[in-house]
Image (cartoon, rainbow over all chains, first blue to last red; front, side):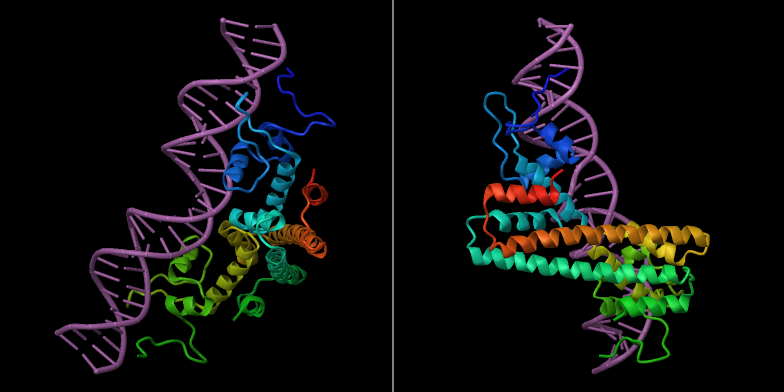
Length: 146
Length: 146
DNA sequence: CTTGACCGTTGACTATAGTCCACGGTATAG
DNA sequence: CTATACCGTGGACTATAGTCAACGGTCAAG
């Protein structure tokens, strides 16, 4: 049953898509989509010998990072933006730094949103989830009003 | 040019969709979608007199809350879930509380993800965004590896 | 040599969250 | 009365993020 020469403990550099899928929990199709969109830069063209692509450890790390970034609502294009800023040698250093700074700001704002929602929910819970239309409106307005 | 009797300072209870759109910055079409999906519970059936729907202040607050929840990656169905748990009288108190507790947990986990990403980016920035394939892989693995 | 589990490519299909458009009705200014 | 800026409804269209199925190729075991 050992049809596939899975990378064992050490020394093996390349994986095939099934192993990457297993390691990350992301479907083959999704991985191929990420690749097509340019989010994985370290995938070889299909090896002419057997027509299989080869994936490195960085692909696994990138996919895990994509999963995290998606959880916070980033789109794949935006994930690509972050990846590119981390890695792209064509951008000058200052551009990359500015991009990262901007992303950090975005993340900070998202954290602020989350804290707002969390304390709203927590307050509601502390209040025994007593719903009262007027007070709810007041609290909704307090948190989310204009 | 005052073709519409916009709700002025006090005493007016109902708005029409254009005013809600203005107050929230959300398009009429999107508001109608939220309504169709059941996220706004306080919209009247079209007034038979003029066929216009009437929106209350709670709709504005809800839409603002939807915007915040969307920013953190919640889908409209999930937003509806939160809304329902906040308001639905048909659920017993304990179910609503449990739902809110679960949501708070989710929010906490998202905050954790965000902090992870933020510190990853911050560390990268502190490191002068020096990209080095091996070190980047190491750091990606450290943050996102399995 | 066949089987079974994998691989790549393509293209169709799905769900979500809208936008856009055309229709016809409403209200008000001129 | 007409122009205009709204309103509701319905249906078509878009982008995103995939999933699924079909086709044919690869490879190790039996």
